[in-house]
Image 1: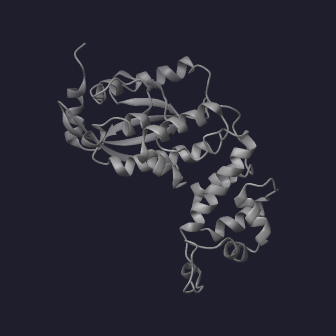
Image 2: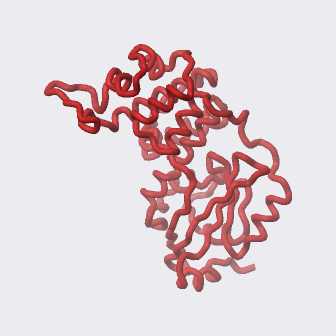
Length: 285
C-alpha cells in the first residue's frame, strides 16, 4: 500500500491550509538561489530556496511566510499572494491553484452530485460519430456517447468498475501498450485533477478517491505528491485499437455552463488514417 499524504481527513479549512503549505514547499524546492543570482553556499542542505529566501525575495515577513507553509490560520491578501506567486515563478494554472487554496477566490460548495441535465446528455450523444464524454473534476465519466464506448470497449483486460478516465489508465495493466503517450498524458491528468482539487479540499468523496488511488497506484501517489497543476488544453492522443490499429485524435475540452465542475471532451480525428479507421471501431449492432 502507498501512504496518502494525510490518511485522516481533517476539517476542510485545515486540509486546505495543509494542501497550500505542501504546494508552496514543492514549488520552493524546484527553484535554486542561482535562479535569482544568489550564492548557494557550500554546506546547503535545503533543496531549492529556503523559506527565509522566499520571504526576502517576496518582501514579506519570514514568520508570516513560515506560518503560511505550516498551514496556520492567517490572513493572506491578494497583493501578498501575488508577491509570493511572482517569487515562486508560478504560471497561470499554479497561481490560480494557490489562490483557490488560500481562499482568495470563490470556492465551489460540494461536488457534482445531481443528475446530468437531459439536454446536456443529448448534446453528448448527438456528437456521434465523434467520440465524446462528459467528466467531472475527478474524471468520473458522467455521460459518454456510443462512439466513445465503442472506441474503448476493449480497453480493459479486467472488468471496469470505476467509470473514470484516470482510473482506467493507472489501474489497467495493458494501458501503456494501448496508449503511446501514456506517461505524458497521465501526468497531465493528475495535474488537472490536482488543480480541480483546490475547490474540493475536505470533500469526503474527493478525499476517499485520492486515498484509494494512492493506495492502488504508486505511480499516481508519486505524481500527486509533486503538486503539479495544469489548465485544460487541446491534447493529441493516440490509441492502439485492436481492429483499427493506431488512431490519433485531438482531444478538445469544452465548458458546460449548466455544470461548472464538468467538462465535455470531444475526440476529433487528427489525420486522414484516423478518419478512415474510426468506423472500424464500431461494434456490431
